[in-house]
Amino acid sequence: MERRPLVALELAVLIALGGFAGANLRYAVGLAVPGLPGTLLVNAAGSFALGFLVYEARYAGILPERTHVVVGTGFLSSFTTYSTFVLQSAQAPPALLVANVVSTYALGFAGAVAGRELAGVVADGRPTPAREGAD
Image (cartoon, rainbow, N blue to C red; front, side):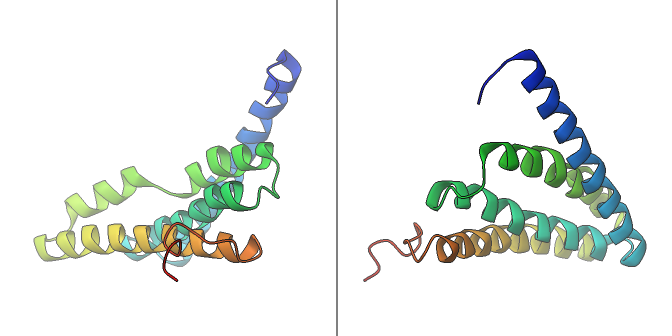
């Protein structure tokens, strides 16, 4: 990507707008689904979306690099929330703490893998790393 001052400024503004949108959607989800379940939902959904975004670039490359930066760095980084996950987990009773940590990581990894698989489908059936050599 070019690094001219106006281009860099434009990209920074677009990332900020993506961050604004992601933070507001995160807030709305928190109102609709408060507490641990809402945080789990946004982190799993964000992992899926980021998995798709990263592997879409690798397999298909349909979306421009600028879109990847704005959505990944702007929107998704403010939509997902590691710090809230940690704080809510630390405040939970021990059994819920363990369940939340395990489910957050399990659903996060599952979401990223599902995003990767969807990117493989979008790329006209090109094999994903999980499918390479499986035949």
